[in-house]
Image: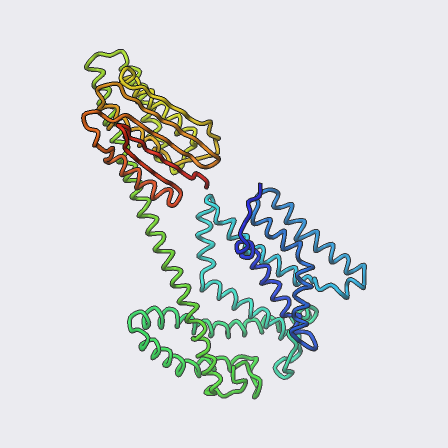
Length: 495
């Protein structure tokens, strides 16, 4: 059964595909003879119609686990092949269709980048996901974008003979020209990479000097002063470095500088440096805040996990102490039930040691543990207490945090059954409705002290563990009425 998803989640998964569509639409609009809003709208709608099957396949491969590779092959290989075949066979369709190899490549890249994150977020690939997260840091992403920009610009410049003296040049890459002048392409790529390196240095100085030191320690005034010093002194120096590139050699007007001339002190160069700082500062601050938030979340998770482990360690000695007291009483009376109790105790401790330390166990195993515990207790109190139980047939795929349910039962024996001198009752019922588990535990209170409440280490630990393990997914109610103490626990076990 396919679970319905909110529209926002669907759009979020389709966001990279829309980005690829927007890039292709802007390229086609820029290359058109008469750009207009109407033309741009028609390009977007036509591209959306032609690529809608690919959008659907992208969403399905990210949302459902069955036959992903088959769906991906149909959408990203066979369907584009069909479109390209129709373009070759039908001139009419070829004149109408906007689907191109370039657009297909954009869609594949968008799908691949978004899918990699989901693949590496799998728990089994957690170490690789951390490596992928580092590789997708702000510095790395901007470096890759800079190299991509250098590649594109080198391809455009290498497609034109003597590009600096033939401005403006068309924003297209001619593959035959690249093959004819491969060394020019490499030369242009290295020069544009150097320009990107200079821009990247401004970004790094802003991030690691101006923001992390001046802004953090000196405040806004120190940061503003640092920006002013950076703009005034570094702009002409970097402009001179750029003018020494072979592309700018012998060029008076139309250089690679923002001023498009050889004046390194031109105001356009200073304005470009200011704009670079103005744009990069909020971007850096946003990433720094996200990084700090992730660090705080990890610290909180580690703290919660440590607290949870301490709570689990408190449960085991409490149970062992009560059970050994029962066994001690039986050995003093030389009861024949003592050997069976030792065996039951061994089984329970084995579960506590090996299964109780896990994050989740099958609900079936937890129910069997409760059955063994009750069998152990009934050896001693069978003549004194009437125990009524009801357990569901739980599917093996439903899991629960171990040693949670047993706390209510231990509490009932400790504060109810063990203190009752007369006949008492204990009613334990577990009901499972899909992923919703309800536990009802009611026991007789001792007649001599009906005002006593069943509290202590066990119940307080249970409340704290529920808050840590099942936040907003549990409900615990306790009440005392007419000599009976009742506890009702409801858990949402959906993952």
